[in-house]
Length: 111
Image (cartoon, rainbow, N blue to C red):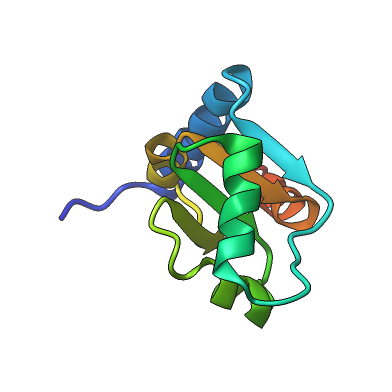
């Protein structure tokens, strides 16, 4: 493995986020919540809104219901804002951010 400077990682994250935004592949939601932990319902909502592509879901901190509802969806990857990296942004076709997660990422990129 090769060590990469923090500045280079932040630059890669900025560029990947910018590219996805230009391609209109980024969605910003007020919050990511579900009333009950049903995978079938969450999967149906994803398919209705985003089609069949791979989706990245980013939040500041996830509720237990979200974790339970999303853990068996193969095309969905769930991560918190602190763990997000440029490779995640490039790898997935659509990216869904909660407002809190997006603010946290912006803070991280400008630190």
